[in-house]
Image (tube, rainbow, N blue to C red; front, side, top):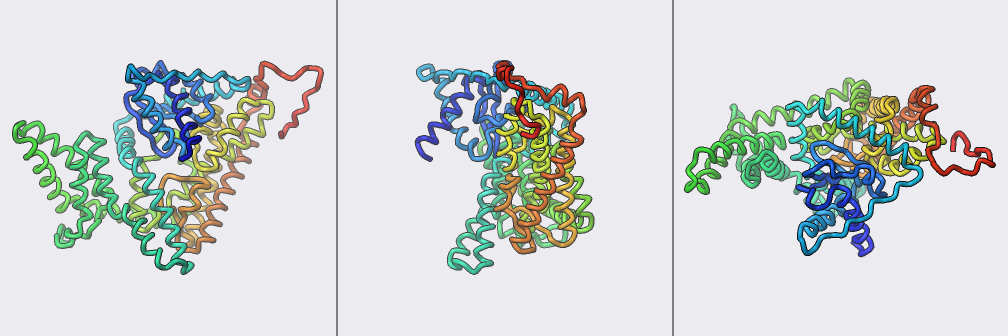
Length: 505
């Protein structure tokens, strides 16, 4: 990273820190693919509107943590700088000077109001959906989110390796790339076990140790339910179940084992009991569940692909809105383990494309609302790359009808991709995480790369066009147009000149 890039990332972190209440208000820091996730002591100290006004911030989302959307790549570079500033700020000798809050631009009023409405809707949905089942799904998602960077990197390398193998290029390099791409996936159960124990309050390394049993080659000598086990049987589902069991065994041991013997007895009993249950029960059961997931996904798309794609593409935006889309990660990962790619992700990616089409329609339907048009222009590049939160919470969701028409666009694109699967052109993504245009390098399937890319591009085009058309013609009532198609600029052009902005600027 160049010095200029490092300074830019540090400046972004320095601008964010005072707007979230300063270093003493931050209790925990993490990041996923697109968001800086912060746990706060006092939520009231956060300046939401000032944060949204920062050029590097694509949006903010409040869920179980306060989440600042920075986009892929950027968030991974800003987070270490933010962590460093928080640590420095907690030291009396080195308190970072707070960055001045940005001055609101003349065109921020309407966009800010819509973003505030979006945040309020998000908070209301969060309150209604904080059920035990959905909270459990979010915790499961937290296990897999840290694995996404490795899944993306290894997926792209696997795609490159397949391309080189098909073309017959660099034959000496192909085995090396295969090893690099496959190493992580062969041990992903260990990482899942480690993160599961960490998420549910156990000792992470014990969760990893129990999950490692699943991928140990020696399990082939063991029989359970009348069948010999296979290394890797049960995959990530088995690892998750085994590590979760280890957490409960460990907590039970901590309550009953004398403190003087804890360091010897607790880890031994945790690994032994959980390991035996894993070998003679969980591996077989998780293996059957994993096989059922793969069979169901194949049957769903091969027999009812168009309808299945329509439903999946149409309902995915509401899942994103609720933050529950990450609960699908274990299913994606299971499909990747079985066939090398997940057939669901390209269909679900159509939802983001429908959102982009809807946002473009809003841009053209409101030619006088420069505030909202500015918001859309700044969020569209991220939207094309599959980062949809800024457009959801800043544009379509608070407007209401455009959110529904965006879902219609996603349903149309999903139906197109699902129909192609139904006709025998099955394909998917070799990794999870990216969407939109960023998914192209990760596509793989039974047909040639050209056919696969063409179908995915066709699905995006359908979603863009249908999302645009549905929003343009049905996304606004006459009252909405009257209220929204105004210029909130407090310093308009001189009245001596008639308005010259065309209707479709």
